[in-house]
Length: 350
View 1 (cartoon, one colour):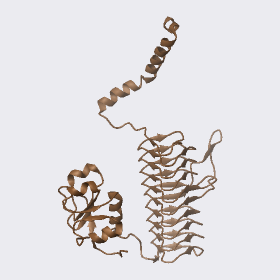
View 2 (cartoon, rainbow, N blue to C red):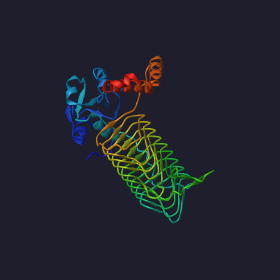
View 3 (cartoon, helix red, strand yellow):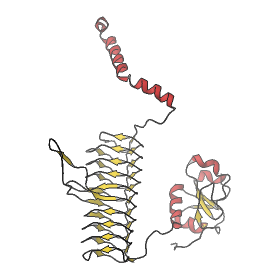
View 4 (cartoon, rainbow, N blue to C red):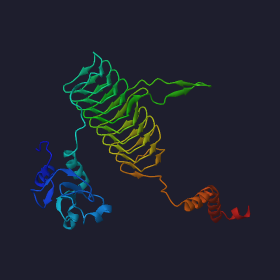
């Protein structure tokens, strides 16, 4: 097993990550870079065929790629079935630690009833309210607030200015980026004839192990039951998850995706940037919803891909298409009438 160090030989990387090495096993690298910008002491990768032309001129010390590209590589090769995944694992070796040193900053407030595990770090102006449980090796960033009765499993990393409302429960190794709000009230309102009345939001938020919540995202607490994210759910920045939503394990959501209340999303789903899911519906496992698409109805076919996106096009072309789109109903009625006339001869006499 490799210990943390600043340089690694290609042989070490190949053995560590089960890669086939073609080239000099004693060549050392100390970082990563793109095919175009990497130098002789860095590792790059080729996963997207769009960058294939940059392989010929790369100055990288080694390139992670598929076996079919290895013969065209002008430098050392690390052959992988999934080059991007292999690159991600290698890059982790060179990622600087962002965890704070263990200890409670003098400017932080920790309620006397809170229970903190071993090697917990609490940054300046952070607040941990009463009856909280903070697991071993957690890191609470500056200005973050952990509301009363909340629980964090071991190894959680809470970045600066995160707010966990009361009774928010996080599993182990959860990463929460800056600006995230977990456990805020869902959009629960009852109309009383001439004004709105608030519906109490009495549930919790429960987040499983190894989840990551992107910056600026919001996860509402349940109205009656809980809002739940199973293990290894990943959200990009500015994702909105409504009250009583249930998200299955290993699902990933790109930036600005939104899920309305009481929706159930399956396991291993992928939601594209800016897509939306209507409330009170269910999405099957392994479903992909493309960027900017909206799911209004349940999706019951596991493994299916859905899209309602109209790609950008020249403005004059779009204006012509829009003009015809406005006449779509009129056109449909004409087609319907023509079809009826073929089966009903009296139709033309009316």
